[in-house]
Length: 256
Ligand code: MN
Image (cartoon, rainbow, N blue to C red; front, side, top):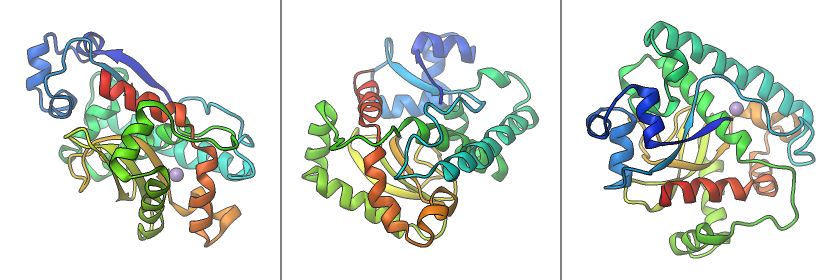
C-alpha cells in the first residue's frame, strides 16, 4: 500500500495548508475528516494513501488456495498497476502541482470536481492498495478481535450476522464493484457496496465514510478460479482477511 501514517502536523506540512484553521475550513480531506471526527484535531493520527503502486505485501501464491497465484499476478501487475499509473498521469494533467504530495483521500473526497477518468483511477488505485493490505495468507480461525470486535458485535449482533450481511452486499452488487465495511460520519460501523471503482470516501458516493474493509467483486478478482461462482469466492475470502490491519484502521480512526 502504502498508507503512510501521518499526524495532523504532517498533513499540514504536506498539503502546505499551514494552520489547523485552514485545514478545518478547506473543502477537501480536512473538511471530510473534521466532519467525521468532530472536534478531534491536534494529534489526530491518520493514514494517507499516496499516488504510486506499492509493493504487494506477500507473494502472488501466498493467498492460495483461496485466491490463486495467477489471478493475483494479473490483478496486481495489470489491473491495479494500470489504475495506479493512470492516476499519476491524471494528477499531472488535472492538478499539475504537488504530484507526490497529494493524498489520494483528498482527491477522493472532492472527486465531483474532477473527470470521470480521475474518479475511476483514483478509486481504482485507493481500493486496490487497501485490498492488498487487508489480506494475508490463510489463517485457521482468523477472526476479528479487541475493540473492533466489540464494535462489530454492537453494530450487527454477531460476527456471523456481520459476515452474512456483508456477503449479501458483495453477492448482490450487480456487475462490477466493491462491498464495504466503513465508519460513517456518526462513527457507526456500516456495510454497503459501490459500483465500479467508487468508494465511501467519494463525495459522489451513496454511502459515505472511512473504509475499513473492502472486497473486490469485479470478475477479474476471481474468474480464473471461481468462474461464475462469485458467492464461493466471497465465502472463501474471509479466510484471508487480515483482521489485524482492519483493527488498526478502526483504532486509528477512533482514537486518532
Ligand atoms: Mn480489482
